[in-house]
Length: 132
Image (cartoon, rainbow, N blue to C red; front, side):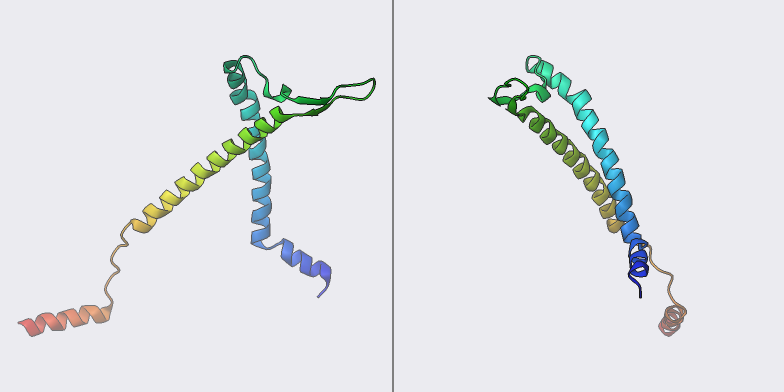
């Protein structure tokens, strides 16, 4: 079997295609969450903290000199990314929790009694006749 044929079989499996779709949707979802955090959540938090813009928070290690830019530790960006992560983790947790509760309800629902087989019906009739 040629390598190309093996790769084609591998790439066309359902799991690989599902994974690719999941990664693409996850990336798009990440952009939505990042925008929600940057554009909706962080501005009010910055106002509550005295007009702080988190992306501007940084420690200057070495000041700019001539054409050399300043060397900084941008801890504000780190805080923003941590908040992004926490929001994504919370949303995924709530989604999984909802899915699990729906599955649990399906499992807890009693299954309808199956229709008795012909043999069981016949045995029941024999029992009823014997009682008489």
